[in-house]
Image (cartoon, rainbow, N blue to C red):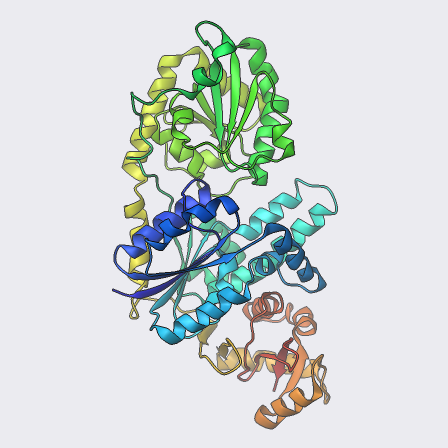
Length: 525
């Protein structure tokens, strides 16, 4: 039994949205065999009632309250530099202090990080192995958002994608192992961060198929909600489920209602589209009408799934496996989803679920299921069998177990290894380069500081550094612009990652250091 620090960006309960489903099942998996110390945020007042439940699932719980409006203002300060907004959004002094105190009170064997934003707390304990569940390549998601928005949001999302990618690279270099939800996401990160590819693995999502199972005694919510639909209540419900304060979900339902729904309604006037999920913003609420219902939070999503004629997931911006799709399949209902979502699932398209991309694709697929209810039922039944065969949480999450022990295997970076030690004043790490790499870049570094100090910090700090090491301090941003053309691109990526990631690092030969003001500088010998 190991002592594990588990860091999650959102309270992992109740498992009612994608990230909370995965983080909850990972918590259950870890707690079944280990002592788990959980540090997390509550960002929704409605989740406060669930804190006592989560406390029973772990050895110790530390909850930081996150107020979204204040967090957004705090994250905006990152625009003054190159740091990702996401990191400042999830930065909390109280949680950081708890992590420090915990490490003093207990011998922590490993830190498990859920979402890259929480790695900043694990970096306070550089001597302890870190495992990171990135889930998706979030930086790629932000970059994708940029293409869907106009300026200035396009610029902001593009900046966030670039800054977060630099930090993701840094975290993956420091981690013992990094995990993503699909092989496609793992491969994408391997392309974006080739120096980390040897330490990347895949842990797929799962479904609690006992909970998400059809029940003949479960009443339909549709007839009760629409007694005025006629004596027989003959509506045909099409259902979308998801957290409605999440932009890809907002975009999906707005597009479905504006571009796809009118054509379907002309053929089937009795259709009603149910948008089921918490916190619908004004853009979603404005869709409500005679044929579109926005439910907001519901006590149980299963009745809506079980009694749906068709479940749709028209996501135009989506990464990895969508839990909403797996849950609908587990409920034995036919699903029409974006081709990118279908491709992420180990299932036979056309037999276990249907894929679509264009407006015409969705109209054709939904019409096919409405016109042939026997085929729709058969696809739903086959989808459930696929979930039972391929999406067990226990089987997928067991892949993390071998990396939790102190003697766990670890793939080393070919161009550098990281010696992580906890000096006074906060977290640091040391880069040990191969002799050839150091020689190849030493001249370049010296060229940046020809006989004088180019620094942005305290002169006294520079003097102290000289006294201890005889080095010049060079600003990382100045250095990175020149280093991009050097032979060792891995070090260039490291410099950029440090410039945006806010990680202090003492230098050894050619390395990274912080000046007296906490600003990162490159040390040139």
